[in-house]
Length: 450
Image 1 (spheres, rainbow, N blue to C red):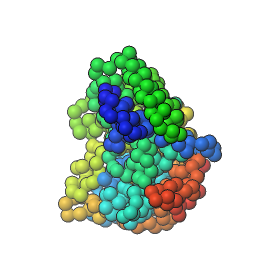
Image 2 (image 1 turned 45 degrees about the horizontal axis):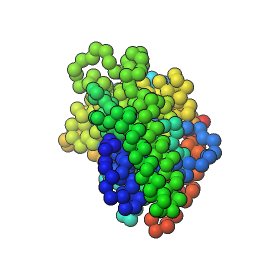
Image 3 (image 1 turned 135 degrees about the vertical axis):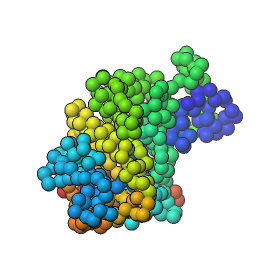
Image 4 (image 1 turned 90 degrees about the horizontal axis):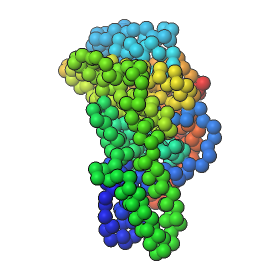
């Protein structure tokens, strides 16, 4: 984050904003002041909501449903694969042997085994699952995190929408809305030693006194432009920049990202610290745990919507070799997160999602891999108004098609907005003054609502 940009020809609002950049938001290059100003728009009082926050775990690349939440033990070997099914705490329900920890807490979650769409390409599948809209050649739609930021606004001193650790898809962003509503990316992996959030760290050589001097300099520039330009936005910007400064200097904001503040017991719960081996599974667990723990800390501190990515799941060859470490590590971290949220009384108000752009092919290919498969796959919802211990829908005997209760992406996304108390029928304005509903054609999944 640069606080040292000079005064370079202030000839209009854009150059004025360039005077004081307080960090980059994702890849968009927004100042925190611009980001906070824009995310405050539309944050009027909403109807009561079951979910006050969302953690979206996006398993990018295509998560194999038959090797995780929807095993098919009676299918031929080339379909069922190498993993054995294990019983869960939901009577009569089984997960794969790589999901042993999640199987123990299955009564706290709900699995949709019949979600379906038709987008077989990674980018198109990501757009579909992250926005709720099928891709359009003319328009990129805003992500669910962006809509939550726009409609609900920020809380405390944290951005409303945060990406852990990075923005890994353009479709996690703001689409046709202002880029200021996009995710605030950490810029670093929390599992790395010396982890620091890029935009909450003072640059070398900038101490508190210098920071305050910069604030005073910006105030003088504000006064100059206010006398020259009679825009209503100029008067309002002061409060948003002040919030940006508060975030930079806020102990609470900084502490939300500080994993060292956790107890030894808490760190151990997420597989962090202590003696561990150097095998692939142990290393994977150690890299996954900090991301899950940071999600909990951010929600606890006031973030509205946190999107977390972990692993690469695009296994066209050597599928089982590829997932033998990363899937158990995901399982461990996810089960720890659900248990931790419940123990802290946060699960009831936090909607936790596990999604991907699509599943993997039912039949193993000649290279020992599984290819892209959107026709049926599994997603998981927990907390935040979701009825726990539910299996909704099913796939056929080969995990290739929905058998009963097909669930559309539109219905899945509408359920998220419903639980957040967002009016998903509301029109937003795209370029050209074109009104577009937040969500079209979707209805909440009533079977899953507690």
